[in-house]
Amino acid sequence: MADNVSVEEFLATAVDAAKKAGEIIRKGFYQTKHVEHKGQVDLVTETDKACEDLVFNHLKQHYPSHKFIGEETTAAYGTSELTDEPTWIVDPLDGTTNFVHGFPFVCVSISLTLGKVPTVGVVYNPIMDELFTGILGKGAFLNGSPIRVSSQTELVKSLLATEAGTKRDTPTVDATTNRINNLLFKVRSVRMSGSCALNLCGIACGRLDLFYELGYGGPWDVAAGVLIVKEAGGLVYDPFGKDFDITVPQVAASNPFLKDAFLEALQH
Image (cartoon, rainbow, N blue to C red; front, top):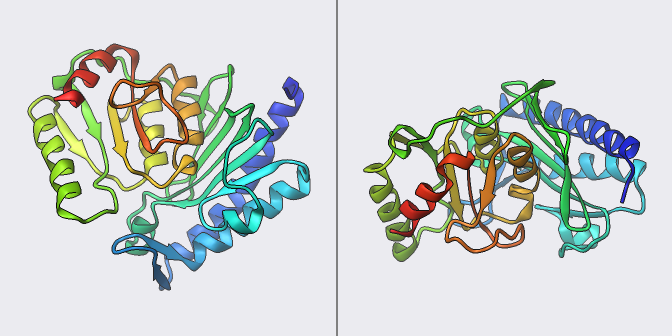
C-alpha cells in the first residue's frame, strides 16, 4: 500500500490532470462538436479522446509503473481488467450527450485503485467549476470544503436521480420506465441529469437523496464517485441487494437512513 504522503500526492496529480482535461472540455463545450456514434444514442467526440490521452499521459509521466483503465482507448493502454496493482480508472468525459447538446452536466472522472479498492477520487465539472475530491479514510470535498450526504429519512421527501441508459430496445425501455413509474409514487421527484459520476457526487453533497443506475458503461463511470459518496458518509450498494461490485454495471447510492426503504422500493 502507498503511504499517506503518496496518497495526498496521488490526489494532487489527479487534480492537475482533471483540471487540464477540464480546460479542453470547457473550450470544446462552446464550439461546434464533431460527433461519432458508438451505438444508437451513445456518442463519442474528439474531446473524449483528447482528454483521455492528456490524462493518461499526465499520470504516466508521474507513475510509469501503474496500470490504466479508460473508457475510450483501454486497448491502446494495455489493460481492461482490474487487478490488485495500482490502477488509474478514467472517464475522460462523462456526460458526452450533455456535452454535445451544451447542457452543463459534464465532467472528467479519475480514480486510483489500490488492491481493487478506490483510494483516490476526483470528479471535475469544468463548466460549473466544481471539483469533487475524496481520499480513502480522509473525507470528501467540493472545491476544498467538506461535504456530507443529506440527512433525509423519508423516501416521500427524497429527490431521486437515475438514467434512461443507452439501449432503446422495447423490453429495456419498458423495464426502465416501469421502474420509474413505480418509484414516482414513493419519492418526491426524479432527475435524469446525464452523468453517472455527477449523480454520485450529488448524493455525496446532499443535492440528491437517492440514485440508481443499471447498465452504465463500466467502472470508469463509478470508481471515483463511489469513493466520494462513502467518504461523505453515504452508502453505495447493489440495487438488487447483492454485494456491490465495481465491475458489474449496476449501482445504487443514498444516505444510510434511506437504504432499506430504497432497496425495498427498487425490488417492487
